[in-house]
Length: 256
Image 1 (cartoon, rainbow, N blue to C red):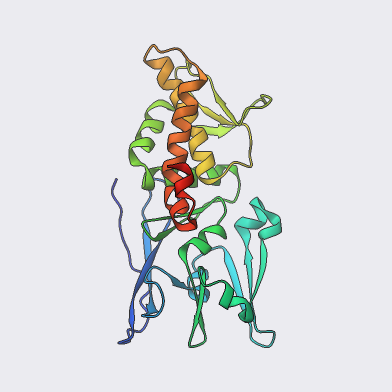
Image 2 (spheres, rainbow, N blue to C red; image 1 turned 30 degrees about the vertical axis):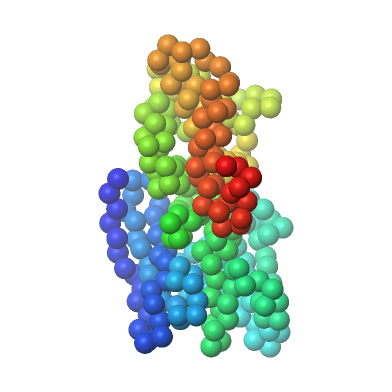
C-alpha cells in the first residue's frame, strides 16, 4: 500500500512544544491520504490534538462558550449512528475528572485521538496513535468505505484477503434474511457481501465482511461452507481491529 503524505497545517513552533500525533484524511481505501500535523505543549501527550483546531478538518463543530464555561461539541457522524451522542457539552469544571481525554493548557483545550474517534462513529479510528478520518458519506456506503479503510490500515493482509474473495464488492442487502447481519452467495462467479444490518459500523462491520469473505474462501477452495470457521475468522479480525482500543481502555486482559 502506498500513501502520499501532505502536511496541511503547521502551527507556530515554540521551545515548549513537540509534534502531536497525525490526523490522516482520505476518501476511501487506495485513495490519496492527506496528513495534518499539529503541535502540543510538553505537558500534553504527544499524540493529542488542540480540539478546536482539529475539528476544522472533521465533521465536528466545537463552540467555546466562555460565559458558560463550557465547550459544545456537535458531531454529524454521531447524529447518524448514535443520535443521543450527537450533542455534547463539556464544562471546564469537569475536566479534572476527565484527564484521560482532556487537558486545558493556557486557555486551549487538548484532547486524545481516542476521544475524537468516538465522535467519528462509522468514519474514524485510531492506529499507532494516529487519528484516521474517512471523508465519505454518512450512510451505509460510507461506513463500508471506512470499514475497508480500517482493514487496509490496521490489518492489510486481511484487506487483501477480503478483496481477493469478495470480487463483487460489498453492498446493502437486496433481500432481508432474518437474524443475519450480513450474507453472501459464496458460489457466485463474483461473490458480493450483502450487509443486512445497516447499523453496522467500524470494526464490527469490517469483521462481518471478513466473515462473509471466509465463506467464499471455503467455497473456492473446496472446503465445506460452514459457520464455525467463518465465526472464528470474524472474531480474529475483530480482536485485531479492537486491540489498540482495548489497551487504551484497559480491557485487553479480558480478551487475551
